[in-house]
Length: 80
Image 1 (cartoon, rainbow, N blue to C red):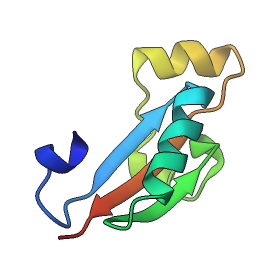
Image 2 (tube, one colour; image 1 turned 120 degrees about the vertical axis):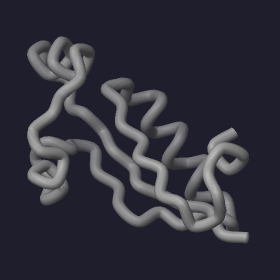
Image 3 (tube, one colour; image 1 turned 90 degrees about the horizontal axis):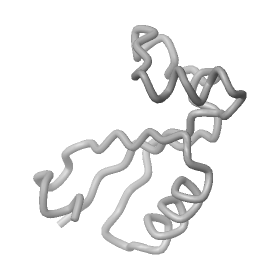
């Protein structure tokens, strides 16, 4: 579905608090020859990309972060 929404080479920023969804997405993307993963972290707010996000947290990120859940992040794109 992401490939249909974004033009070739466009970056997709996938961020989630759900560990199962993160692991599944990482696995699926890793197996696709038309996908390039640019950055992948299981702890977004302890990564070097944290500052690039300007400290903005969604309401749900705050709820789950406050409960101790790490926010996961994958930046990827598709090729032709």
